[in-house]
Length: 58
Image: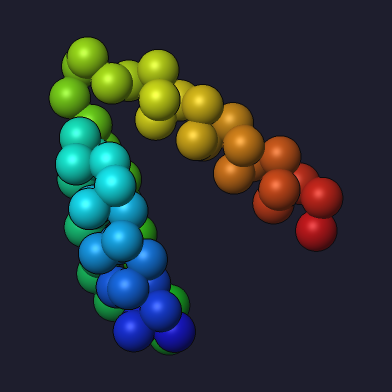
């Protein structure tokens, strides 16, 4: 899973360089933090809303 997440981070960084991705192992999971500068907060907020909607459907 870690390789898949790191691959996704690499692709997204190439596409949307305003995102900053940080990964860290947490017990048996991999934590992914995403941040942006103030000028791109709306894009990150929209991503968070979409993520919550998908997780809520599970």
